[in-house]
Image 1 (tube, rainbow, N blue to C red):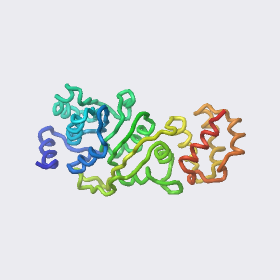
Image 2: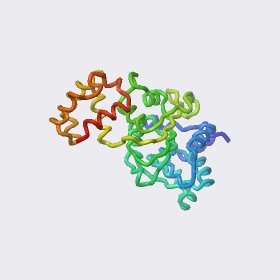
Image 3: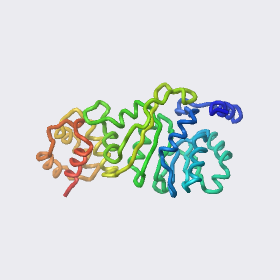
Image 4: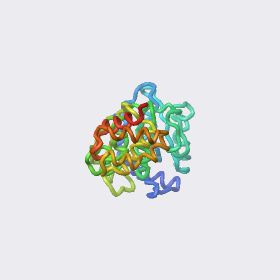
Length: 283
């Protein structure tokens, strides 16, 4: 039986339909699910997060591989019907603590408290930005494999100078090595088919500064991304002083002698942006 046939049976038996407003596009490409599982490189002791397990097709494959090596899965599901379906389907694995199934919004879950160190997921596309923000602000992660809208992935891997280059791009690429391991996943891999191509993004984490304060700094100066750094900072200094507890007078003095002061914000590399922050944040 194909995953599409299995999905049809589940929809009839459990009286549910995919909700497009929640970006419920169920993966029916079994080869894709095995490919993601291989890429996450499960090892003994890993705690792997799955976001929005839905029907549990991917969960089943993840669990099978996790049992072989001694890893554990944490799945967070927001849909009540899907949560009940998963609770029944994986009752034995939940009982044996091989799977921790959580009902709720993953954006409100403390991943560090759960001990998550890897993420393998096909998350709802409408939370892509919020989810990647949460991921990059979470410490102790080693790898994430995410299936996302190709257009969003293009923003994440953009270089300085590109139109798509922004605060989240700079934050992600400072703290992780990002590569696209598959860039042409067709809509037919899902039911219903989304109105976009999808891609698989791999993030291998190497933290330089993933603090909330640094992300606040990035978001604020990228509001003035087309201005030179000095002007952008002068327009941002009042907000930044309140948000990061900087001395406005001290920062104003530092801005005068700032390296790359005349360079436009969107032309600064992630490393250069961190150097600016560290200089302004120093005593």
